[in-house]
Structure formats: structure tokens, C-alpha cells
Image 1 (tube, rainbow, N blue to C red):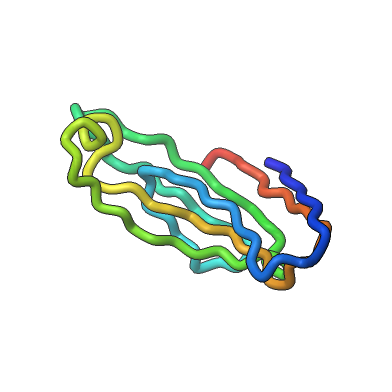
Image 2: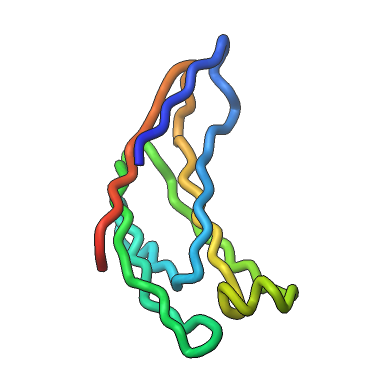
Length: 102
């Protein structure tokens, strides 16, 4: 995935969020490992890997419990919100996150 932006002045924060039902392991700089996860009705998610430039982007994860029954029926008990934020936002910049199979 590649994204870019251009502003008149450097913003204080620039970030991209991704949602996944997978458990996310951020223990390796520049790499997020997405583990296969049980979903509703006996289904399972796929596993995957996201690779990014750790010198430029900071990755974090937040667990979001799902209270809504309809969402849980599709996604399981929770989602993980992955945030990739530029460490030093400029007026014009961009980034690439490579997606692969786990």
C-alpha cells in the first residue's frame, strides 16, 4: 500500500489506521506479524505480515472489543486498530507498507 499527501504547512500528526481481526505482534521494528485468529461460526482469519520503514513510521496497536452482536458475528470478539504514524511529518510526504502472507 502506498499513500502520499501534500499540505501548505507540515501537520502536527499524520497517521494511517488499519483494522484487523488478527492478533498483531509489533515486537520487531519495521514488521507487524498478523496471527491467524478464530472468527465467528468456526471461521479463521488468514495470517499476514506488514512491513514498513521503522526509521520513518511508528507502529502501534489498540484492541477494540466489539459489543455489537452483528459486528461480532462477522469479525469475532474484537478488532485490532493498527496505527502507522510519521515520526517527523513534513508538508509533503508519503509512505509504503508492504503486505505479505504470514
